[in-house]
Image 1: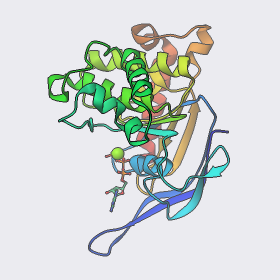
Image 2: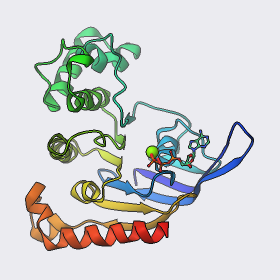
Image 3: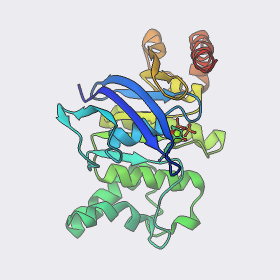
Length: 258
Ligand SMILES: Nc1ncnc2c1ncn2[C@@H]1O[C@H](COP(=O)(O)OP(=O)(O)OP(=O)(O)O)[C@@H](O)[C@H]1O
Ligand SMILES: [Mg+2]
């Protein structure tokens, strides 16, 4: 077990003193190397859950453990990729990617090696000296992913990372992320609004109810397994199993919201 969430819930108190139940009691166990996708209507507590796992937010109740140890705050073993790129505009791509390593006091030679490897992994080997504003949205997202990879985290937490991208760039990045998760065996927790994307990427799809968010469905996705090889893109989307799963999960979200 890589991650275990036990009785997590979250209440926020607004500036007006109003209490908001964002996340209902949630238990979840995630195995090492698993690719877990989370779907659910807007405001159901997905980002809240991710922020708790990241260690940015202390839950109102419950505990989160990674490798059996309670998570007490953010740590390098858990890298986060947000929907909007959060790059430093005044730094080059290379300097953005090595930023965390520099803070940690990693030597210049080691930083160079790790940043180069991470940028090559995301297909940006020729863009070390570019500034973020010179990059497309997809390239900025790749840079963000490279920055996380350079830290070599065990878990990658992604909050709608491809939500702002066009369909073609999105599919390319989905395929790259699938390659990466298979090659590097990272545990991935991935939030998306797209049921299609969740099924394309996830070994497992979790459906949350509207606020206060709870897990209402936890579905293993075994389409590739059934065909005996990893299916991708149009080939996967055109299987009857894909259409069936998509309709069924969309119905679960709809039912949860009704
Ligand atoms: N700091 C905060 N203070 C008060 N309420 C908050 C705070 N952060 C989130 N909320 C509320 O908690 C609920 C869950 O928010 P969260 O951002 O986790 O939802 P989400 O599922 O990620 O939504 P989306 O799909 O739109 O990103 C929402 O109703 C939101 O308004
Ligand atoms: Mg969110």
